Image (tube, rainbow, N blue to C red; front, side, top):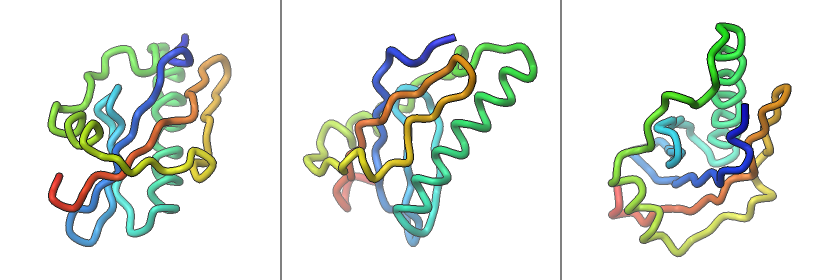
Length: 111
């Protein structure tokens, strides 16, 4: 049980009035009205995913696909990293530990 050796990359972008946080290694995303709320929602979603998978005897993250290429491209084009201290990470649940992510903000035309 270990996605702990992987880097987790997240791209933040605006969609209408919402901020979206898209995890690249796993096609998981959240929406929120503020950056701090997006961080909390992302952590909550990851912890929930881990808890539900373990409760059902399944390996967390095992069958999740990476995010679509357009999000990877948004991440690569971005030159705006966010300090990792802003993220309430790492997520840890039993033996599974999610590393502090590398987060970048996508430009306004990227979405």
